[in-house]
Amino acid sequence: MLESKSITKKFGSKIAVNNVSMRLEPGHIYAMLGPNGSGKTTWMKMGAGLIKPTDGQMLFNGQPVGIESRKSIAYMSTEPYFYAWMKVKDVGRYYADFFQDFSYDAYASLLKRMDLAEDLKTSALSSGMMAKLKIAVTLSRDAKVFMLDEPFNGIDLLTRDEIRACILENAQPDKLMLLSSHLVEEMEAIADRAVFLKNGSLADEADLENLRETRGLSMADRYREIYGQEGA
Image 1: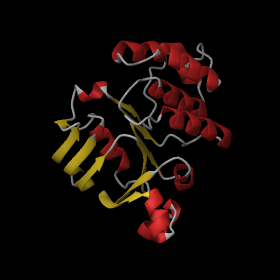
Image 2: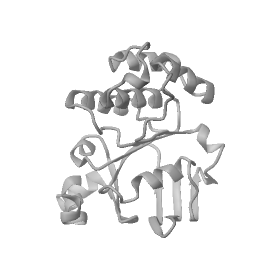
Image 3: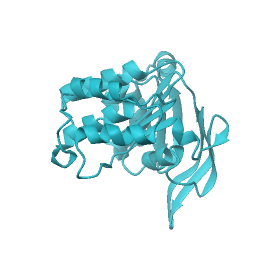
Image 4: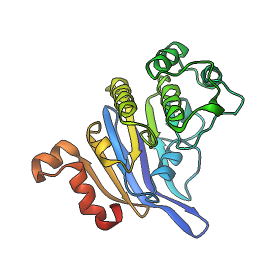
């Protein structure tokens, strides 16, 4: 469904993603893992069509990622991306104007579940509340691909549990879920496949059940093997 072919992204002399080829399929929850600066966010932004690769191709259903693919790909960035004047309800209206697959009813339900009032101003939200808002508005789309960049950052344990439950409920056989994080333990409980990036390159891809059965390793064990002191 979402595939990168020998994809490279440079920012000046810095290589953020280096010749990465991989294919992600629907029906799975992927954990994209690696320390900060390993290329996770850059790969996801290319997958979302927000930045263009320097070399190689990013494909969605065999076609180059672009304006059309954005209709089917929901991307949640790490940065806040709402206007300061917006209230929580305005964020939903904003998304409804841009995405035909957005459901305000689903959004209102998730807001209630996340204990977020619609009249709150986004500029007054704490980092944890902002994280919940970004999750709610992203998961209210009926997209084919969901890419969530660091969805568990800056939030408390109980909110992480709620977000994890929402992600699992949205996982469907025809949908692809990709979550990037450096919080390996959080990913262990939710993902069935893992992609490990190191210094912009693909270090490994793993089916987590197969990894446990054939090598007796957890995702955290494999993370430690790949990164050593770098991932500590």
